[in-house]
Length: 363
Image 1 (spheres, rainbow, N blue to C red):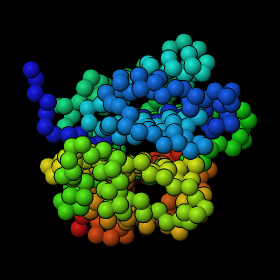
Image 2: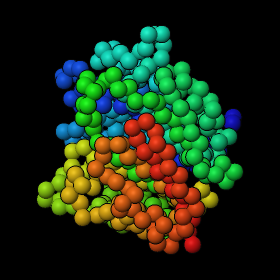
Image 3: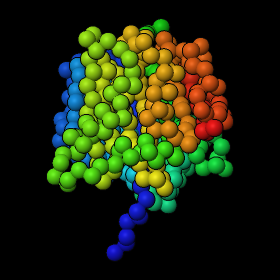
Image 4: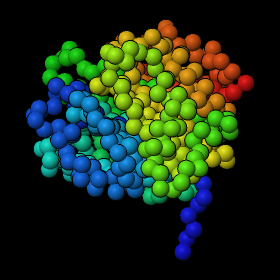
């Protein structure tokens, strides 16, 4: 019998597929990704090697808290984020089978092999334990080769300092503007902030360790961790006017995951691996502050998250669509994050998106 490694790979694989540019472009309003049944998603996630722990929903999205991170399903797009030794990309054949059989969606090109949905992103930080990964996920080149079997016009990027093995990898396809029916068609605003943190402060990490009896439900433990770490206080907004809900789970003996819903269309998600030798936490959010009338700035949000985990180093990525109201360069003083030194800042113009990557180390 082969012994399982004791270490745990916190850094996640993040797959995001926009099948259509926005909800109103879905061809049949009565059929969308959200029409696909729970049992079908369960089958798909078995291929990824994870399970559904719980779900919360709004009028615009379904949020799945997973045994290894999260999945968010909108009518026209899907985000799947999984950690550990999950096989995220191996769900692609099943996913395209589902949308073909359940929704009658077809994104195949003339060759009958490759697909061209509106936009595809796949990204991950360099793994801490690449030798423990399964199948194609053992190397970035294998992952990209696999993606190229499904998607047309894909490009791959390695961003950051490769020799330090904390760089960030990105695969992105060219935007399929044929799915915008008019030349000047307004597409959905999009902004994503992601923080990938390593070397968490040991005292802060203890908030995500539990000594609760085994029979206590993980959601009960998760709720206590949420309150203790003030994870429900990251954004400031009027809760009497903005819907807010948080689904959290505390693992035994340690570890934490949550999906938080802000208004109907926005989320933030946090996942924590607190073990000292490979401690890691991630924060991802698509919240557009202007649209929820938040009194927070992106700078406030970043500082709140850093206060929770106090990592030795972290990298931050921001994806901004060209038409988004969020403007990073104006209101984010990237050189003034308290107690951290900016090591690298890299900007890429990617079709109709701008990517900003910044890496910090603690002073």
